[in-house]
Length: 442
Image (cartoon, helix red, strand yellow):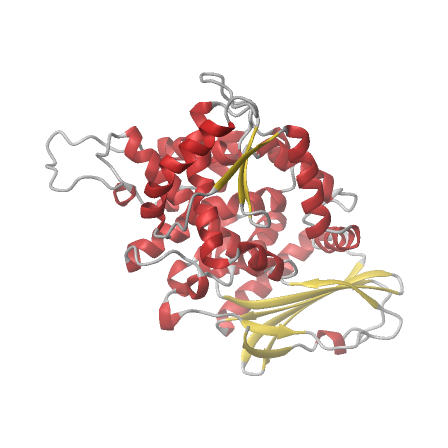
């Protein structure tokens, strides 16, 4: 549904300002991932009394959602209701599949070494609590079913259905279960894919809501630049409704919000540049958070694909690898902002990212982190290296660690190598494992 054409300027209603837009978006997100007891104005959906009504309503909404999303239907979407205990059991099962205990420990240790989470963080229970606090509807690609949680106010039910029907249609176009499984161990790529999926569904939901809130006078094309939206604005607005989210470490909070807010900006920018040609799926799906943060880097022949940063094997004798992955531009920015504290400086120093890989090692004296990042230009690399030195000085104000930040040219690509090791590690011990190979775009 889009706004009508041929309107005159005289007497034309105004869209909400940025603050109002943020608040409207928050209502929409709450409908799909907000506290289930957040509204009491309507009837309550119950497993016994309302599941058939939900299915009928989903069938009514689906043709419009197909039009707005640009995705063909292929038959009605399966809809069901789950109780809160059933939801909790599902979340526990999913977390165990996606984040088994050994991987959870390794991830927490890596992010703790970076200074982004406390070393004693219990990540899986935190994620379970966050999702239980937020989720009121979700699409399960493994079961091809859209689920609504029992107790959802009917004032929110339509928005839940619209958002999740988009995910069901995405799944029919591109097997989401396989996509998510393939990206389980590729942090930045998984975040980028999730941003495309959630941003697309959120944009459709927002357009659907605008058509009803403004009686069809406005559509998404009338919205102001969505760069006004900020994760911090949503956090402030959500503070009373989502205490578990607001108290979580910053990197966890932003990782949960970015697919919705950053993804919405990405899909909107893509549509403004290319027109509503096709959803951001398949070859059009972003590969990195860099492409989400800078949508123009994902378009067509000028697509800015990251280089592959490969750390050599084997690790030095007496050491073992605990975990290895990449951060991507989004988490590099979060790391700098968290340790240095200036958002503008962190944003500037993280731009120009072109790939990265870190490896957490355990050996004599404790943990060591070896992290190699590639940059578009030597200037970008130097800017990040300077910011990284400031970040590590903030991280270890009293010293006590053998820390080195080195800018180099590796295979014709500007790189920055960070080594954070125990103070008593002999110089050169980790030199070999820090010698990255730069390959073709992954």
